[in-house]
Length: 96
Image (cartoon, rainbow, N blue to C red; front, side, top):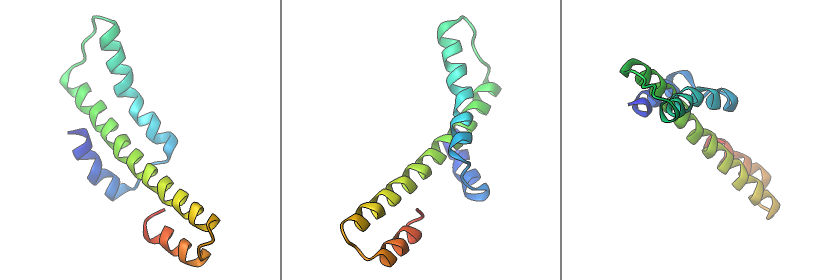
């Protein structure tokens, strides 16, 4: 449910900075380890909130990874001698 909620949130508000993205994933990871290592069990509201935060972070990480791949491909094309203006246009059109 968190990823389903994360998609429209990222579309409307944009992709957060990579540091903020990792911070958004921490509550779910922390809660999961806390439940694994102790007798504590989180409730449904906490699971919903941490899941939504993690879903937003997960979708944002996909976007950051996509941008990284597009920029890396553009860098490789420039090294191989491709037209710089055409590569820059390609990077821009693919969201890098």
